[in-house]
Image (tube, rainbow, N blue to C red):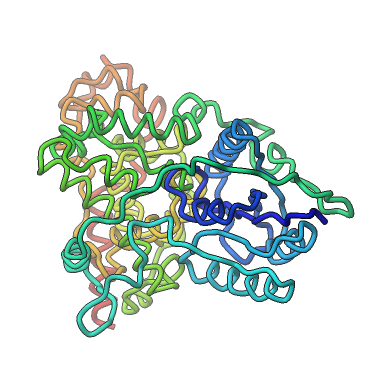
Length: 480
């Protein structure tokens, strides 16, 4: 055991050094830091999907590099943190462990059990708030109950003033050596646990994303300089680069939301800035809902929808997942997701509405697919957004609001550029035919080299029939 015991710093969804309250508090002790991350294989919390594992590998590598540049390192373990963290505290002699609060019920319960096990070893778990703009408990109605509507919550959130300013990286950091970890207590092989091998499907993700805090700060700076200035008007244009594209960095805490918020203040037009800050607010609100409604990822928040009879159609689900539905804008979104691990927000709404309404397939199937394929698969936002589209959440679009994908394409991809990018077999169709090739004259299809059912799928559902089927199911649910 070392003469000076280290302070343990447990990284989780906060893989950065800037604006890291737990790091700031740990460094203030003057103790050498032992930094650790655990790839949780206990099953007590939801495991990350395949795309998020790839993103996590890059974020861990970047964090380790940043620590090594300052004389430290990152110890990565895999297994059950309820066993590993107390054992590491005992092995290192640490009397304090620093980390951030987690807000999902399973994670909170796991942390409480770990804190109890640490206390038995004379080690104190010290938690800070560092992953949201504000703790979920800090915003409530006058009666003390949780808000159920974003607009009212947002008004109360804004009435609290600006979120706290981000803190910088501590000037002086010292690090402990990694203790001997013999006896089956070995560092993880991150490549084997996190990266795809046979086959390695991550080429599109590698071309699209650069992991790490340095890249995240550059992306934020670029957005504030260029993207924020046209955010309100450009964020819904499918073919434009109008999205912030910061969500993957926020998801693993490579950026903090406070860094993003304060970087935007005073920048751009007020309407663009407020529009973007409200979108950042939706991330906090999603975690607020999950904190107060732990069943969010699993159950309808409106229990009357438990009576709705969803269809089981593996072939249609597979066609949706692979971007082979025969509905061009839906297929474009799903192919963008598969290749890049990300999808334009407007496209997410279109493809989700198509799945739960035109195909009448349970929103949980879509939530699971997004969770596995998105690099920004945030458990709270993903579930809130799916329940919003399905009409089953506490703040939701009504079920009878059914996006018409042809009209959506005409409005948000009027020249077909988004469709042509991701569905190249339709690229020679004229603008007026590309969103609904089944309505195009045969001569137009032939000239563009398109044969429905051969070079491009025929629609797997008639949009009118699908809409009527969804409304019939909805009316039956209301009657029951």
